[in-house]
Image (cartoon, rainbow, N blue to C red; front, side, top):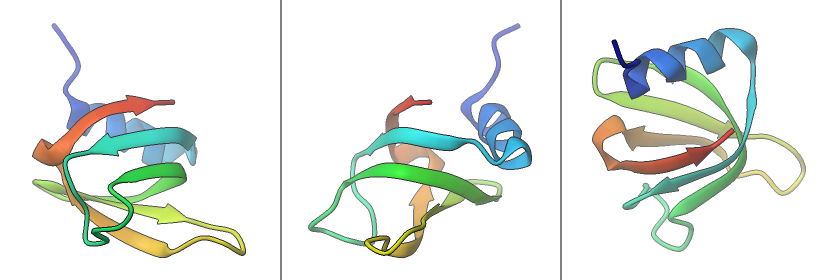
Length: 73
């Protein structure tokens, strides 16, 4: 059986994996639709909270799971 995206996000959250890139249709930041160097902070029923840490990071970003196009881990 194929693993769902939500299940994989939960695994990355538990492991603290830094994702190279998350490609999304859009986020709460119109000027930055794709996310780079983020970790999964929380996985809800239909959303995920990513965090972009570091001095240039923009903090928490909320994305609906159905808006995620692809992920490079």
